[in-house]
Length: 363
Image (cartoon, rainbow, N blue to C red; front, side, top):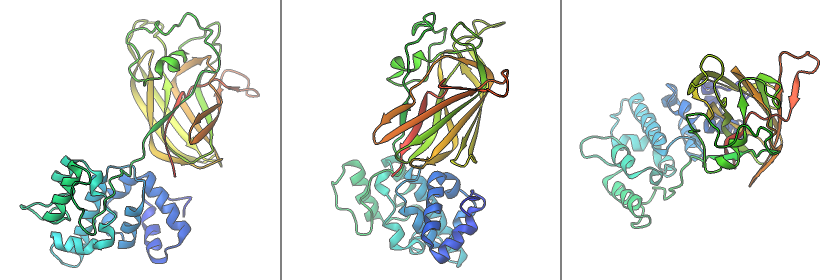
């Protein structure tokens, strides 16, 4: 069941979990929901799940959605429970459906003041929301000035977002660039548009050419990166360089068409995520590719990220095989496949195409 779990097969598994409360299955379902919260909370089947499942979800410390989406999903679930028993879905009945246990785990202090007023606070004109006027006043006071007013009984004082902070593992260059022709100031227009504060120290040295050079002999459309971590992480995406400049008929073009297919394989070589990006991208820049589904990389397990491109990229840069981003230590192995060579030796190691990982630390 765990191996075949997806957003369509999840629901009978959750129904079984509600009945048996098997701990391993509960853990695996929790991981799936944590990785795909929007798909689960907005699914047409969510309003039909048992109370136990809603309680399991609001217990999770990490859900990669804003808290306001969790509040809306729980309220929608409560409305459906009222209608199932022919009760009016008013505030009191919805609150009775969810009960004090679930209510105490909702993090009203983790939403913005505007979101709270518009989406969760007590309203005199409708029965939207789950809170009384007094509870709404206390929460709004604490959203404005923390710890300025006593929190009501049964309402959580936890203002921590369930969304984990997104970090970047920036891979450093292994050796000084031998392509002296392409200096940091030598980008063609437009200048790089996607970078962070460390761009000048790292990514401006990653050169991707559209044709061979004296130091870049092998081009490819097929790149891979093996990743191993000593602490679990959630992988959201990768960053790769774009072609340095245009060649051929349009040597001064600013953008070009590209399609990236990014596949993540687990320790058994089984694809667990596939993302397709197509569009125009700028020359002499970098691009973030967000995975369609975030992936949890477990400790000391080897995962592979494969990147297929529609254009040929000639690379000459070797990136470090280890990066220390406390509390996570990353170990990398780069490889490219060159289709024009003999099948007996198609791989070239240590030539890096994936320059950054976008991730969060997983508890």
